[in-house]
Length: 44
Image 1: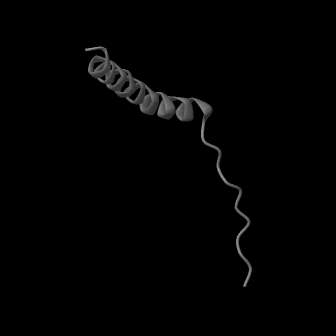
Image 2 (image 1 turned 30 degrees about the horizontal axis):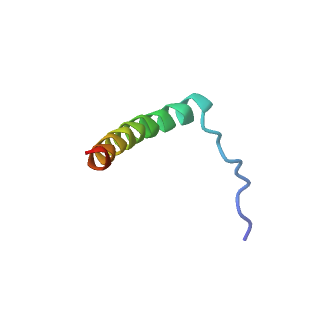
Image 3 (image 1 turned 135 degrees about the vertical axis):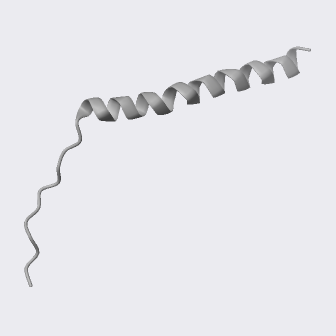
């Protein structure tokens, strides 16, 4: 039995960039808030 010859479809670069932006922005926000809160613990 032979398998059909399929070429993978490519995802548009803009969609990949948009997906990463939607992940990185909240991640950076959370990281900044964590550093601010942690620094308050150590600076008195």
